[in-house]
Length: 128
Image 1 (cartoon, rainbow, N blue to C red):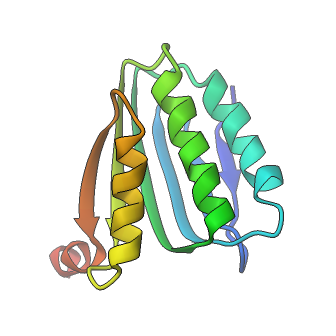
Image 2: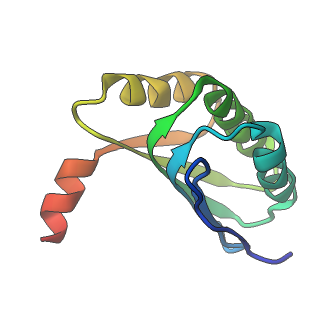
């Protein structure tokens, strides 16, 4: 299994999925054909064999069809019995209640994934 790297475009997020279980999705997601874009990610995650997984999701915008694909991605990770521990770090702008609530809805549909909610502003201030 190779790492999965997809460069960001104007309508698709940057994806860096390492076979060691460190996964990142960041940017914007409003692709015309989200199943085509996310299908590659679904397939890769269904074959992932890392023991511990940390998925960082840092999206400043996603449309409805992309959010449905994130639900599917979380479901695939949640049901992958090869993965012993799955944590998701959900980044959101503190003024963006909708993005925060999207993370909560994703979490409500999992049975064993732990979510951590991180304000982008608090992370930025810690870095400086």
